[in-house]
Length: 92
Image (tube, rainbow, N blue to C red; front, side, top):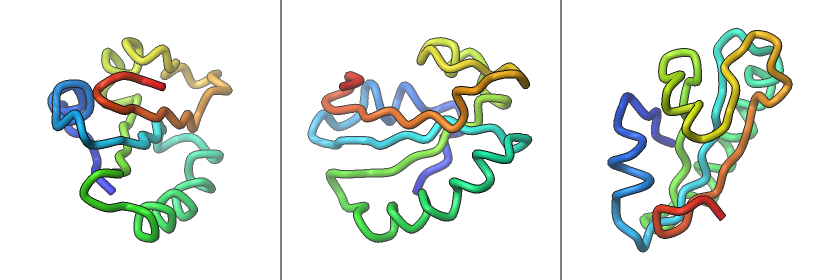
């Protein structure tokens, strides 16, 4: 799976429209995210391919991107981890 480093828009929203992305919004301080990480990694290794990709976005490092995706980076957030599916650059 990919870790987005400021390239979320370029890869997911404006990248190859044939690619479907499953994106995990996470925070390193979140126990729920930490517990989910191995499952997400296994899914990406099992199902990832050229046209179905998995990516992770650290909401604490990229809070503006998280906000644009309506995911809270607050330490009190109960949204994390949040999974979003993007097809043709649009969330579905």
